Amino acid sequence: MSKHTPGPWKAVYVGSSDWDLDGPTTRDDWTLAAAAPDLLKALETCEAFLLSAGFESSDVYAEVCASIAKATGETR
Image (cartoon, rainbow, N blue to C red):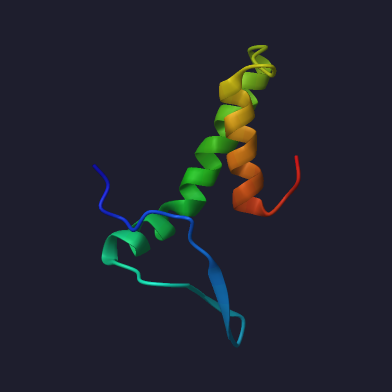
């Protein structure tokens, strides 16, 4: 079971091009945040695999795409 604070989280601009997590945070939250780039890369790899395997109409593919869009601020 994860120990991080349940989302949704919000990043807030704190000046000098620095961002922080809004609200109460724990060490586990920061560990998860630090892993975010690797998690995004893994999702992008999953997206490419699912697309190449013909699963673009699956619920899993839709969930992967939605998660990537949320992480990158894109609309997909």
